[in-house]
Image 1 (cartoon, rainbow, N blue to C red):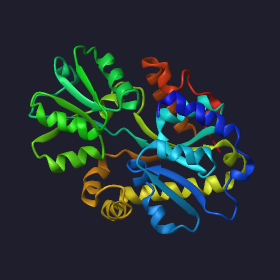
Image 2: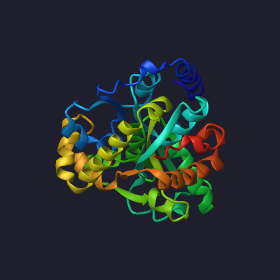
Image 3: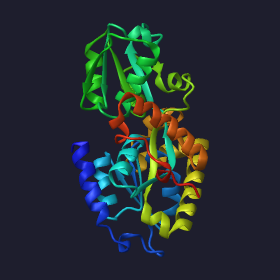
Length: 313
């Protein structure tokens, strides 16, 4: 589904939502997350709660969560950071961000030992997926800031296609996210991580790269602020437990069908799992969105999110 069409449908549907669509006080809070780092940070909470206070929906892509959010079947959702900004712009503030849940997860892989810096990409093919989304915007920003030109970026529809292209091109490179990086390294021992784009981004002095955020419908925030506060506290405890107990977390991640347990164990240290709220969230997202906006205004919905987009208790 094209982004403009998707946002138009969301705008119409969100305007039609009634207060009755909100979760009742005695019903489980409904939370959607993507099968990746955003859901990985929630697994301890999912295990502890067992559906008593929270009802979790896991999906492979944002398209599978957005209709439920629109219909009022979800109270909160974990989404790509730039998509959250686009939704806020196109729904006149009906969606607000409450937390950052995932920082940078992008890496460049190669076969061999030739890539030492971004400048080494000049004249080479770089296979990637995620065109017109965060991977493209962050890559372009980094290349521009480094003054690197002549990179033959070939966009693929899926991560697996980018990896397959790399395996056929001994001189090429691939831009991939975690945990797909961990899976690729486990399956292909001749591949190595050449560049950490997250570290390169931070070296620009603009704060960290942001991959995922948690959003809530504005009506839910207004009517049930205490339930939101309780959820964010439980979410923080889950993130802390995942980071402190990677083996247990990996087992739960595998059981939840998010990714393979062994891949999860390899990937967890590099998945940027976090929970940032309040003013630190505002500062981090504003810096990140400003960088994306400088590359392409449409990457954040045509304008930078206003103050009302950011929820601060």
